[in-house]
Amino acid sequence: METWISGTTGLLCLLGSPVGHSGSPAMYNFSFQKQKIDAAYLAFDVKKDQMPQALDAMRLFKMRGGNITMPCKNVAATLMDELSPAAKIIGAVNVVVNDHGKLIGHITDGIGFVRNLKEHGVAIKDKRLVVLGAGGAATAIQVQAALDGARQVTIFNRQDEFYPRAEATAKKLAKAAPDVEVVIEHLEAADKLKAAIAAADILVNATTVGMKPNDGESLVNPDFIRQDLVVADTVYNPLKTKLIEDAEKIGAKVAPGKGMLLWQGAAGYKLWTGQDMPVKAYQAFEA
Ligand code: NAD
Image (cartoon, rainbow, N blue to C red; front, side):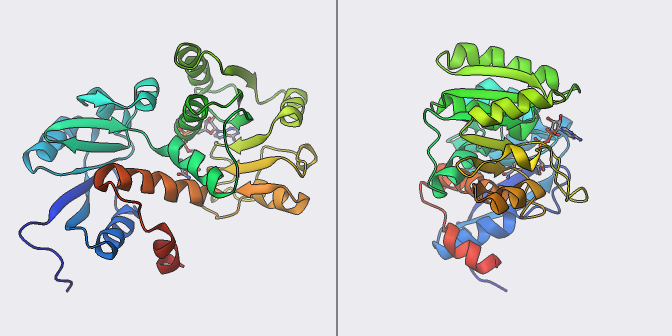
């Protein structure tokens, strides 16, 4: 039994349902111990309608903050005292900072994506992106890329219930980032996808395609990929999707989803503690 928990130990939490599979408690508690931060992180299974109570408990117990996961990210955004610019545009929150009773909501998925690219030597500024998808991960990437000065974001989505979300994102970005050109296309239009990728600097798969148990699937014909294209994926299970493997074979620079996951977590850690999460040490511990 570790003896690092004492009467002064602060609490951070994960709220959502289900939470039992989450890697966040292991990652954050490792980091707190490594940096001798007097805090502990626990996961609580909380449903959407319990969020007001859970956030009141966060205030009552003077928790430093926490993470919000599905299906509570949108409802949490409506319960915050303040939202970051990206969280305001997206209407979702995955990190809460408790600033002396004032709850500030952030969304760090897009921040993690941009940081992961940076770790691979790629800056987002002035770049042309093709983003496949219009769900949670895709929207976070589209918004953060626009806020961070990308030149163009072309969204491809199939004609499903997520397509209107692409239209809503484009509308919001026209106001929040008017210099960024946002284009929406149907994923079914293969010729348009080919032309858009040919004109792009960065291609991102932010759909669930390629994720287990459907690994081996990719939305992109390998012939569309060229050596000087950066290819990123949000999918982290498997660690290398078919898209990433195809891109590697062609010699393109790749940024798999595991890095985004790690850096979105590190962004939350920095917001709570003011310190850089010991990412390299955790990676070594996990390996
Ligand atoms: P979501 O359900 O919100 O969105 C799903 C998207 O996939 C939609 O755009 C939908 O149109 C598209 N899609 C689904 N099946 C498709 C198909 N057969 N053909 C074409 N498009 C299809 O999902 P999400 O939460 O945005 O997650 C997407 C992926 O990103 C998942 O694999 C998830 O694990 C991953 N993710 C990774 C991180 C990270 O930090 N790396 C963070 C969030 C999500």
